Length: 225
Image (spheres, rainbow, N blue to C red):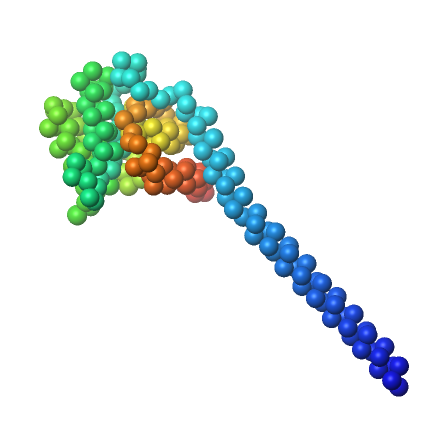
């Protein structure tokens, strides 16, 4: 009897070992898969950024003398103020300066200001006020108050304004994204890069932009459904 009990115990022990081994395998596989998630996300971000760079790299201009003439430029909106900055938002100020350059150099005949607008927050009116103050006549300015995102701003140029070609005015990082969207919709858009700010000061915008480029592909896919 004692031998039968010992055999039974040994059999139960072996079963427990097998169960423990199976659990460890599942845990190890799970850890391995979890470790791949950051790599997959990183690869996705890099792929989206490279794809956009490759499509638009030859459609960007820094010098007002070099950029071809278009009938209109589209200034992408942002808030005129930043918390704790007495001089306002440098992204806003530099975009306005770039639009003024284009208009005074007769590279465009009109300016469309595309941004978010609500009862308490209106980027477009702030941009118009700044342009008029710097010598651009209000008769040459049109407002697009439904540009809540870069994607929506570019779609507005196609669907509402029926534009086939135009100049996008923003910092380079946003221009690249806007031109990629315009290219997808068959529009002949080029970008005039407003002066950027030091990466150390704008590092949050820099990293947010990397993720925003992934969102471009998500938005395009969603609008294909």
